[in-house]
Image (cartoon, rainbow, N blue to C red):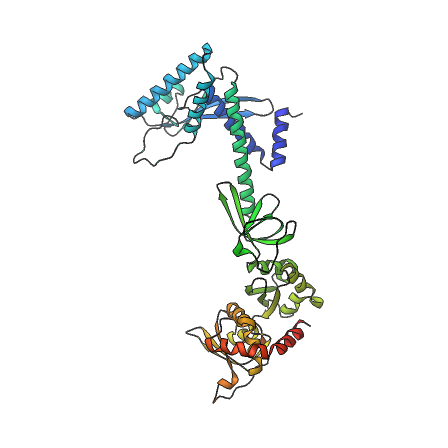
Length: 447
């Protein structure tokens, strides 16, 4: 049967989800700190081997063997002072003359020694805390060589005092807290760029705090959707954009407006996307309003748009529900730029497209009654289409083009890029006039 100490360690591991070895290392660090405080000196590099089943431990002074070298006056004085201090404290301890004030002073000195400010020396100097010269090492171990690790066992002359026990308790508390933070950080660092379930906790100013189970994540204002309301207790899906270690522990940044949320939802709700049969080639999103997703199939017998919509639109409606009612247009991807741009401007019908390869600009010709549909409300359709295709799109009416014989195309699509100046002005007038037609086209598409 396990000892009470081992059982307590296992209980800590289960409660804090920590590895057993990490808790043992914490206890060993605490015992080393307590030994240094009561029996050691600042030039000892203490390591402890702890046996949880018996509660016994061994203390070692561990140093690396280096070549003999001449000590500087500063190093020699430091070694001599440390030896005299250890001898004086040992004598006073034996006589029982260590006062509480001295104990606190020594504890303060221990803390400052354990957390030194590291400075890069210009040249490597002998470090009496972690190194021992070859001649001195051979006195303790005859076959010692340069580079060996010399472990000298130290005696524990008596039980630890109250202040040493308090020091050990503080070390255990701090190290366990640090170990727990590292476990949480490593867990969520491995889940960066994933979609997670979360529960809204509360608002702090413009920030929204969400519970991810093991930690609390932050959703900054720029990662929120303006049309959504985040009430405490709401269950939402969030996208992990960044995980970093801050001064107070791991900081997890999540988003509801990131375009990758759409991709992750498609992979979750559509088996063909998860299996790689249907590929998502590009995504353009205006969070809370509309998204355009370009899809393609790796198999000729699979319709990528039909697979994403699902029977009676069940699959796409689930995704729209997760996005808070945001509209999602599914566009057929095509390697041919003209056909891809035509598809991306749906539901508008395109007459002709002229490409300027050097400037990466496409001039799109549409009939007068399709202009408002092509541009979209506030230029949204053409703006999204431009982001989706990677082309700058200039929308023009057919009546503006003269001296050309044009053949209307059969396919059209929706949403686009930054319209040119003249297209934007015409959109303002045409939008109101043709809004009923636009609504009719969208209704037909949804059916």
